[in-house]
Image 1 (cartoon, rainbow, N blue to C red):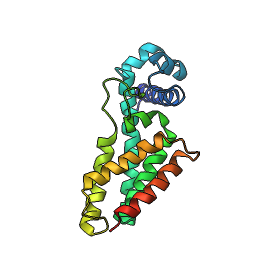
Image 2 (cartoon, rainbow, N blue to C red):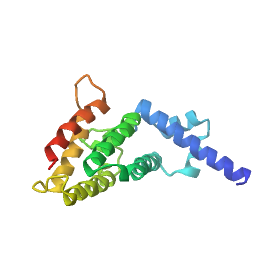
Image 3 (spheres, one colour):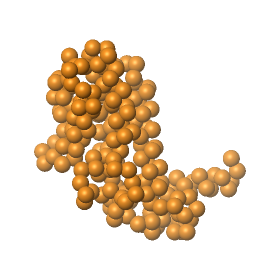
Length: 191
């Protein structure tokens, strides 16, 4: 890689890191392109050499986070039964969301007044839905998960756990909240 390409890569990474920091501290809606570029020590004009909008930055960050969760799941898939894999996937997702709270409104899409940018998908569920759906269906085929409950209903329950934990007033951490709710749900869907 030449010096010019290396500088481009460094600038791109600096913008992503600055955006992450600003989205975490200010929230997506309260972060401007100027905030991102001030934090990255680059000019505002430089931003538009890499991204068209802050929504595009957010989508790249989300894609990277999802890829991390997907890789962790792929690396561990063979070690677990479908029920164990559901629990593992939920906890890994909860950890990712807890460490990157700026994506929580996007993940839950709970209300009109959420910190969800315009022109963004309604939620992150479609990407995560596919992962959870495949595990649930495999569990039903294997006989580990009840077949008298539709897979889509079970899937909806998992999504609602993240929504409930997001708005919980209990004095426990987000990840602990998810862990306990998952424990209850898994006992109910076990065959």
